Image 1 (cartoon, rainbow, N blue to C red):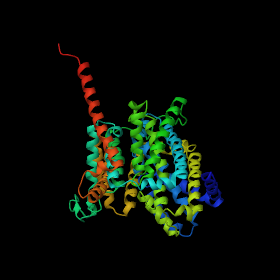
Image 2: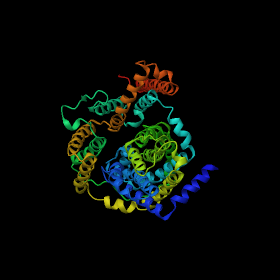
Image 3: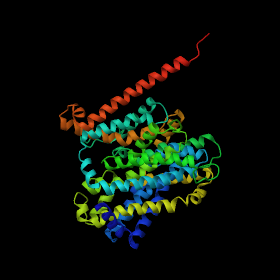
Image 4: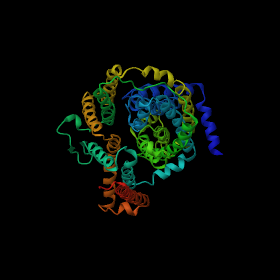
Length: 501
């Protein structure tokens, strides 16, 4: 009953005309920025943060939050139509772009919009109901637990990649090695920088993502020397009843996965999209279609993406720990307004906490009502030849990478990874596992070092702790299951192979 009263209190503040306006501005700006290749919520919030000084605390934070989760949805558009992802829409490229090539762009984006609404709604319920308790649960995870969790994510590469398990793990390892480029934060030594000054801070996530996916896809299309458009056929927006029945279970699974991973510090939308895709590849009745334009490949990751974007506020507001760079900017916005996120925030600033929670659902409605009906119109703008779009896509990619650090070297790094990504495409290798390894590799190293320091070099810490011990057991079972599955397939292939003579 207290939760309902608190939500009613939050809606009382969020439904004021002023805060509704701030929420709408945030959602519209976030969606527009998310659709632009290379420009994400990080750059936008950074630019708009000084402008919030003169705004009221609740309104300014509602607007910044709207930009964040609005960009989560908008990023799916460029990923689905042009295979130009942000970090949080990498997985959308896999099946979303395949649907585009089959003339189902409208259906793919409609699926992303509805699934995002479902994921956001589920996450808001989790945020309102479990925020205080889940903040305490997150504190139970130690370095060894996070290390085991990341290793378990690597083991799930067979479900994320569209190739073989070996290829997926190999690409993941390449990503981990790329993530080690830069300066070691403990020793201060430079690693794998080739004595290049601009690599001292490592390769940027935006540069790697745009290079391996965006630039590589442009090069691939140029290589075909064929007249191409971002999508073919008519825009069929509404799904059929059988298609709709496939969307709901996948969206609910993605909502559950995203809500859970968004809570854990170190999780968030990037990891959630991969985990949701792995869950669909494991549980969906249409798992054989995954990677070939399956509607579940869009629904699950979109729901997980939006769910994780909202529940990622739980570590920030419950324990005062931002779990990703965007949450760090949100924390800066809180501090600018004289509010310290943490265990005392709910009691000390209930209008802000519950008003922000309520505004998230209002923003969810804005995103659904404003964006889904307009899909048909702004998709028509994209319906021009790729030969015309190539220069503009490259321009936005360069602007996006340059705007991260205002450094032209980032553009050259993007070009280099574009060449690498093109080589992967020509070799039939999937870049999605590489991105997961690149993102999680530095985190794995950091947590592993902490675990070793705490245990004084003893590997038994990964077995002694209940959480990490359970995850290690699941990893072992996963590897055993993969080996048995491979052996059974090989045995069946030998039995069915025609005998000579």
